[in-house]
Image (cartoon, rainbow, N blue to C red; front, top):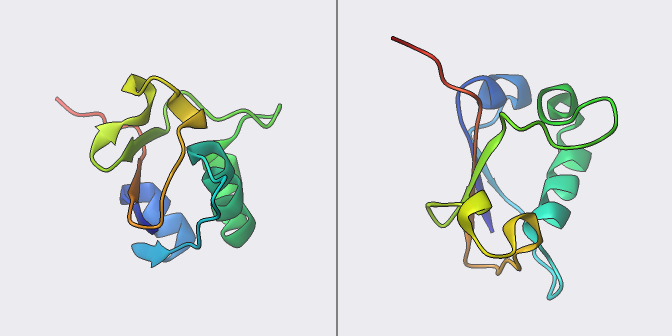
Length: 92
């Protein structure tokens, strides 16, 4: 699976994109945990003190907002999928 990081996530991890192996039971949630094991420097940006994903972390699976999918973070993923992680974006 290809994983893409954007803006401050990319800066903190020191990498733009990388490949992650996918098991047959993998979900978006399990991939988040694997990514954080590989890049623990992202933990303060992605998780709150209770270990829950911050609401401002935007995730897309194959260019679809994960929260718009029926199973949300429990959506199954495949080796051919792409996960994108975006920080909050402000501007005016």
